Length: 123
Figure 1 (cartoon, rainbow, N blue to C red):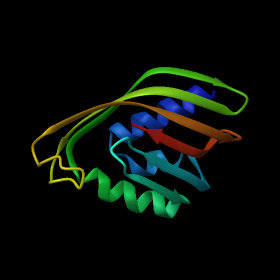
Figure 2: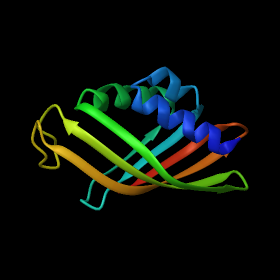
Figure 3: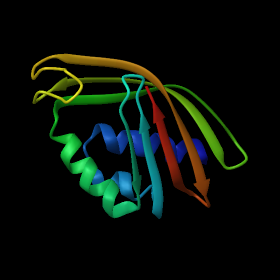
């Protein structure tokens, strides 16, 4: 069941279906993105997550996450994820518009009931 929620969240992300993504999370969801390049971001709540999802979705002409492996149990899950996207604009990390980005990382999920209450992406 937990793996299904994660898969639905990733499918919605890939389809740029923000409402679908938000259907998978609690109202007080915590979303964190931590990058080896030094940047990090923390969002609290569905409204903040929606705002950033709308902005970041426009930063790529194409983007896709692929689940490599998922391990879950006791209300938590860890997933190895591969991201690929083509930048639509120059990004703050130095990637130029038109360049392809490929990153492999890990995401950690925590659940409350059948919804994600915390998502932490590391790349």
